[in-house]
Structures are given as C-alpha cells and as structure tokens.
Length: 267
Image 1 (cartoon, rainbow, N blue to C red):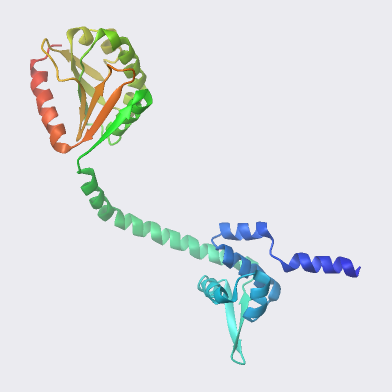
Image 2: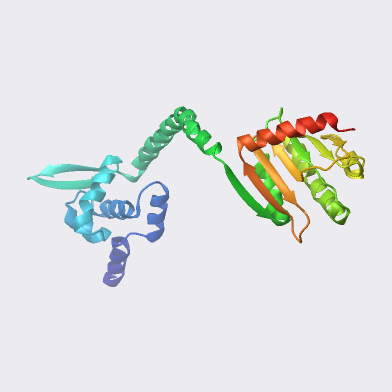
C-alpha cells in the first residue's frame, strides 16, 4: 500500500505534458504553463517549491510569475516580508479567456481604423515598376491570375493576338480553359488579331465576353493590357513564356495604341 501511494505522489509531482500543451493553446507560454501547474500543486508558496516542481530556473521564475500576475492567473501576498504566490482556481481561467477575447475585439477595431493608413503605404509599392517572368502553362495561368486579381466589373481587358498555325490550336485550347475564370470574375475583353482568328471557332465560343476585331497589318505581338499591367506572351518555344510588367506609363501607352488600332479594326 505504501509503494502504491508513493507512485501516486510521483505522478502528481510532475506536470502532464498534454495538459501543458492544452494550456499553451489557451494562450500561455510553455514556462507559464509549467509554473501554473506547479502552483496548483503547491498552493500558496514561496518561489523555492514552485521553481523545483516547475523546472523553471530561479533566474527566470520571477519573470514568469510576473507575466502570470499580469494575466490575472496568479496573485500574491506578503508574509513577514516574503512573497507567497498562489494560482487562481482552474475555473477562473474562463476570465482569462474573456480578457483575451475582449483584447482581440479591441485589436480588430484598431486594425479597422489603421487599414486606410496602411493601404496608403501599399499604394507606394503598387506604383513601383516591376516585371516578372512566368514559364509553362501553370506559370502562364498564374500570370493571368495576377493580371486580373484586382478586377472590377467596369474594367475591360485589351489584347493583341498574332495567330500562327503551328501553335494556334494549342493556344485556343489554353484560352478556352481560362474561360471559366474570366466568367467567374465577370471580365469583358476586346481583342485585335488576324482575320482568321477573329472569324475562328474560338471567338464564337467566347463571344459572351469577347469582342473580337481584325486588321490586315502587322501587330506588335501577343500582348494583354489591363489597368496598370501589361503581359507579353510568346508561344514559339517548347513552353510558353510570359513577362508581366507592372508599370502605369507602359500600360497607358499600350492602351492608347490599342484604342487607335481598334478604330481601324474590322468586325
């Protein structure tokens, strides 16, 4: 019987690792969880027994205790000039969670008020000139997603398309695969290409969101223009390569050029 009791004492002496993890998920640090569990066993105590049971070094114990006091989980009294620390009852941890929840709500409100100022900083970044290179079908898909990620319903995508027989069917297949994405975001397009392309089966299948026209003179290449972005695509290699340029002036120049060509293009 005595051996059995001794085993129970040893088990209750050391904190349960799973309980520590659960306490950490509530918002305590590893050290705070160890100290809190130790204090549940010591009751009102000086730092000596708390240090011994928790395994927290004497040099750090006061720092951990102070954090627990700040969180309302530990209190203390002074007897004969000595501090005795005591943990709150476990059910009082609900109060700790209530305080955390209230603080989260306050922080949400702070963030809400702060967002307009933070967005001013992002405008500076967005206006910087930059370029990215994408390779392959997956890369090109990503490029188009980035191209239209800030699409607004009133915006229209513009593009030039130089159709070549050696890759026309492959290109049509890719853009038909993109059609669900375009419909989902609700974007409309104006496209200028060769007569064969403007009268092709592809343009018929996409007529719900594509206004296609053609010209009989050379075009600058396969180029998409939207807002302050320009995407140049080449299909001539083994894999498509796309260069996404984020520059307001370049996009504006291409837009102006497109509009002039559009006036001369035929339906």
